[in-house]
Length: 97
Image (tube, rainbow, N blue to C red):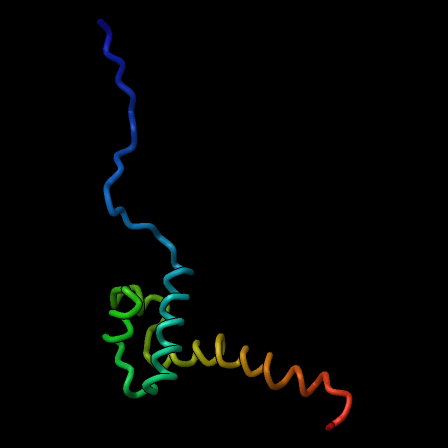
């Protein structure tokens, strides 16, 4: 009898996948909601990490400080919403009416 051995990669249950953009988006989603609901000062980084399900290292890789996170929320979320709902319609309007 001949036993055929094939090499298979080991698959570990619960193996972590690397999705930096997904992680960054998740943190921005949680921060945006928390800043709107509770305010900037009442939103702790610990609470944001727990809600987003990320580690401190992962959070600080994308956002070195809480201020950097807040500025990213403003630039990427708030500014886009203001542009779409306020600025663009005003610019497209033919008159003040």
